[in-house]
Structures are given as C-alpha cells and as structure tokens.
Image 1 (cartoon, rainbow, N blue to C red):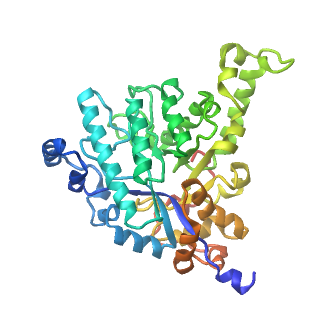
Image 2 (image 1 turned 180 degrees about the vertical axis):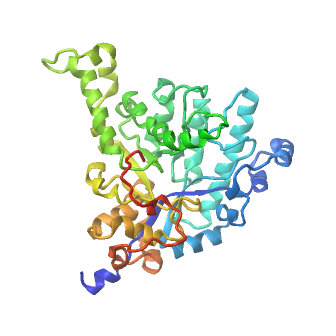
Image 3 (image 1 turned 45 degrees about the vertical axis):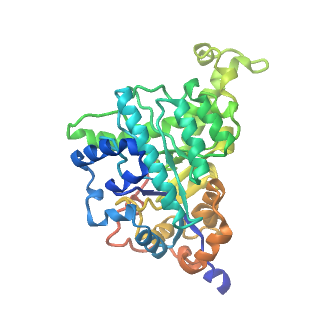
Length: 415
C-alpha cells in the first residue's frame, strides 16, 4: 500500500442511529386540536428509559452535539431511526398496543408529529441524515398516505415497519391486506426497514423475562424476512426493498438456505416432472404465490443494517453479499460503538481489501438510502478514518467500550 492509499479516508455512513425530540418539543408538531390533550398527557407521563433521563439524553435532539460526536468518531452521515417516546404513547412506539380506535387516532397524531420533527431535524444538515418515518399497521390506508407525505417531506430513510408479534391485534406481515403498503413503497422507491427489538410479544414482568427477551428478540425480528418472502410481496412488487437492521448478520446465510429448502419442497409438485412432496401437499396453492427462491429474493431485494458488525460475522460477507452489508454504530445507545467506532471498524474489517471496507462502511448505505457521495466524500476527507488506520488490527479493546462489537469470543450466530 503506497502512502497515498494509506492516507486516503473511508466515507463512513452509520446505517443505524437513533434520534427523537425532547418530550415537550413535540407539541409544535402536533395539530392544534391535540394541544390540550398533549399537555395533560405530558404532565402525567413518566419516562421509563434511563438513557432518556441521563445528562446525555440531548444526543437525541441536539444537532450540533450529535454532528460533533459523530465526526469525531469518523462518521459523516447517518440513517436515523426513532428513539424518544412520541406523543400519546405509553411506551416505545413499536411495542405499544392499540386497544381502542380513540387511542389509535391519538397515537397516529403522535407519530406524525415525530415524522414532522424528524424532517426538520434532518434538514439542519442537508444530505447527512436519512430519516426513517414511523407508522402504524392498524389502518393500511393511513399508512400509505403517511408514506407519500413523508417522502414528499424529504425523509429519505424510508419507513420503519412495526413488528406484528402474535397477539398484537394486527394481521401477520404475510397478510394480503398490507399489499397497498408494499405497492407504494415500491412505487416511490422507499426502503422498508425492520429494526431489531420491535417484534417480540409481551413477556410479562418476571425477572427472567428480560433474559428470555434477549434470547428471543432477534428471532422475532427475523420473521419479517420469511413473512414477506412467502407472502409473495416481492413477487408482486419486484422493486420493493427490505432492510433488516440491528439484528446481526451471521444468521442470514443459514436462514436463507433453510428458506430455500422449504421453498423447493413447497413448489416441488409444479416443477416439470416433479413429484409432490409432503410439504407441497400441506402448502397446496403456495407455489404460484411465493415467487422466486428466497436466495434470489435476498440477492435482488434485501439488505442488512449490520450494526456494530462483529469479527465472526465478517468471514460470511460473501455469503451474505458484499453489496448487502451496511455497517452501523447505533448512536447514541450504550450498545453502540461510539466513541470507539474507529476501533469497531478495525476489529471487524482490518486486513480486508479496501474496496470491500468502503462498500460495507458507507458505499452500500449511500446506494440504498440515496446519499450523495460527492458531498460526503469531501467531509470524509476531513473526518473519516484513514485506510491505514482501519487496516491495523485492533490489539486492545478500549477500556470504556460497552458494545457487543468488542465482546470476547463471538461464535454465536443468532444475531
């Protein structure tokens, strides 16, 4: 590697960051008819999240602090998922049940307030934030309208697909009722993002529930992949794109292989000269609706937001798809790599070819979310990690690092 190559810098885009307004700052983004209800709700609301009560909570909404900390970490752009609690929600917006039509209307108003705030927040640093819009699945027509509105408002991060866990009260994600949502996302080139932690059913308050949640949450998040595949969403809408974020990446090759197996067994009877299998008899009628093999759908339609990618996942990059992997720092969460993202990149990508690192660290995210690399490359020339820096293997984990990226061992593939 010559000196010019060593001193070149990577353009790093985090495909997984989080933000939201301070609680009372959502009020101006609500329709005036909701202001009195908002005042009453805000006065009674008790925030259950320690990170939103800490001195560092303003990382969610303090644009100047955020830019400075991310730049110091080598990151010049971000995909922005929600973090703070929007108006009228009793808990995280992705998990709150909607028991009545009246509450549903208020919560929609709260999500729209967040989406309006996010559009303004992204506009503070043009071209450097791709905001992900929130929506609910209880009324698909409302969801479709919000996709159109937020696209027009400049949110380029796509939509956040809520989880539909068993018992949620909304149809499973393979349901045909969601087809208008997939259609509008395909039409407008809007990525459908499904973030880890958003699809687990309620587990109760027993102490063991937290451990069970940690074991099961990624599996419940993965379900969106096979629901949309076997539901035929990609067959009907070939331009539809699905991004699975903060769910790990090491599981993908094995799961896609397993899905291919079941797909083949389900369609065996309709192949020329094929004989019916037990699965094809059980799944009669599925062959025509599912479409292409899951591995082909993954190749053509799917991506992974590989937050704080870990060393054991990297050797699988060719099986996952080098053009599919988008690294993320998970700012400002404790499990994120900030302020040690340079070290996080090193522990994952040291020794890899420069073009592969460039793709996973930023190039793929630029393509999926429409970032302008001409703009970002100029910023990265000042703030980005150098090629030589990332190429140097990390010999010692920073003492203050709390991210799983730095966890010892790391042979578990469930993430």
